[in-house]
Image (cartoon, rainbow, N blue to C red; front, side, top):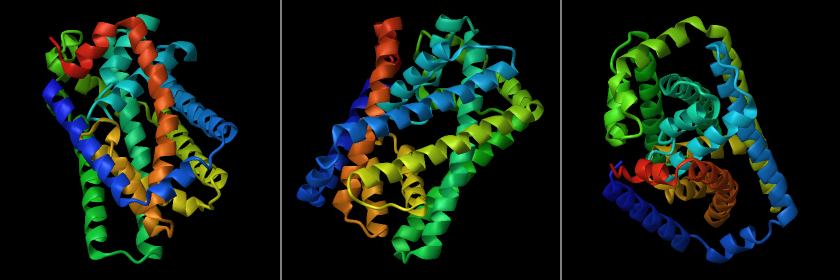
Length: 332
C-alpha cells in the first residue's frame, strides 16, 4: 500500500482513538486498567498465545493435506509475522499473507505460490467460522436487548457486507473466476518487488484454491473445528479477563463483544485503532457496563495482541528488515 495511505489511515485512527478516550470517563478507564495485576495479565496473555498456536496448527493441517509436513516451530514464525504485518497495515485481516508465504519458503522450503495459496485457504476458513460467531452474537443482541434504530441499521449493514463478501469469494473461486486479481490491485501487492509471482500466477492460484475447497472436505471440516475451538478460547479468555478486573461477563456477553468488535477490522486503519475501542465501548454500553469500562477492556486486549505483534516483527526483522518496510510502504 502507498505510504500516504498508511499515514493518513493511521492519523484518522489516532484521531478517533483520542476522541473515544476523551468522551469516555478517563477515571473509569484508568481504574480498570490498573486493576489488572501482572500475574493475571500473564495468564490472559498465555491463553491468547496458545490460541495463536492453535490456529497455526490449523494452517499446518491445510499444508499437510497438500503434501507438506511442516513442524510447528517453522510455522509459528511465519504465522506471527503475518499477524504483525496485518496489524500494522490498514487491512488487518489480510495484509500480511504474502509475508507468511515468504517466511514459510525461507524456513521450510515450501514454494512461495503454494504457501500463499494455503494462507488464503486458511484465512477463508477462519473468516467462515468467525462469520458464524458474529451472526450468532448479533442475533443474541437483537433478541435480548433494546437497540436504537441507528444501531440496528448499522449492524445489519455490517452483517450484509460480511455475508456478501464471503459469498462472493466462494462463488468466484468455485467458478474459477477472477478474485485474486482484485485483491492484488486492492492491496497493491503487485508493486512489491519481493512478490511478483502473485500477480503473474493469479489465475493458477484461483484454480488451485478451487480444487482445495472442492476436494479436501475432511481437511476443511478439521480446520473449521479448530477455528471454532479457537474462537471459544477467545470468548472464555474475555470472560476470564473481566473476572480479573472485577466484573462478570457471561458467555453470551462475550459473544456479543466478539461480534461487534469483529466489525472494527473492516475499517482500513492499522490495528483498527479507534474503531476497536469504539465498538468495544458500544458493546459494553449495550451490555450494561460503562463505555469507559469497554474502552479500558479493549486496551487490555490490545496489550495481549501487541505481544504477538512484537514476536512477529522480530521474526520479520530477522529475515529482512528491508522487506518489512518494503511491504508496509511499497518502497519499490
